[in-house]
Each structure stands twice: as C-alpha cells, then as structure tokens.
Image (cartoon, rainbow, N blue to C red):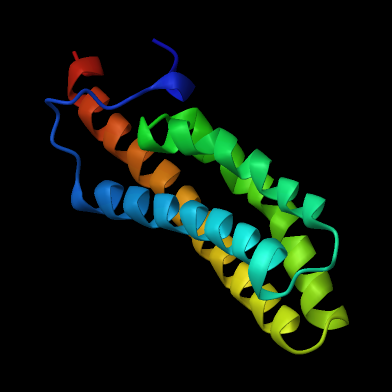
Length: 137
C-alpha cells in the first residue's frame, strides 16, 4: 500500500485530531462551494452567471475528503490557494457586499488549508507511531 493512498479502515478508531481536522476540511470545502454558488447566482451577481462554473473544480476533492484519502488532503491544501487569490483580489477591488463575500472566501480558504495541512500531519504522525513498534527488532 502506498502511503499517499492510505485510507483509514472503518474498524480503526481515528484519533480525535484526525476526526476534527477532517470535519473542518469538509466544512470549509462545502462552505466554499455554497458561497461560490450563492455569490455568483444570487447575492452579488456580476451579470455573467457562467462565473458560477468556478465552483465545479471544488466538487472534485469532495469525494476524496469524504473517503478520507490522504492524497486528496495533500493536493487540496495546494489547490485552495487559487480561490484564496481570487478572494484577496476581489476583496481589494470590489465594494460593498461583494468585498465582504470575498473576505468570507478568504477565511474559508484559510480554514480549508489549515485543516487539510493538520489532517495530513496528524495522519502521518499516527501512521509512524503505529509502524514504529513493528519495525523495531
């Protein structure tokens, strides 16, 4: 089994930090999806509803996060920076509600990044901790 494709077996009790970081990462990703759709379709539409398609790439990692795939947590922590950049640019360039929504997007991106990074850290630490006794002679 490759370490990057590790999934936690259902019978294995995961440490609390792993469970919490998973929940925060999924919540952050779902928050970005809902915010992106609401922003472009109802709250502060730009007049071009096709901008709501920017949310589609966010749906790709959702299955991997829900299946607890370590590889997904790794790449989503890098992928989320694209949305962070968009939020920073729109927060500094837009006015009113759109600027406020952009700040919410930035906060959700930071939450998703931090939760994903900590999830990877805790999973790898937990894997090393369980593998160390078996490796010792």
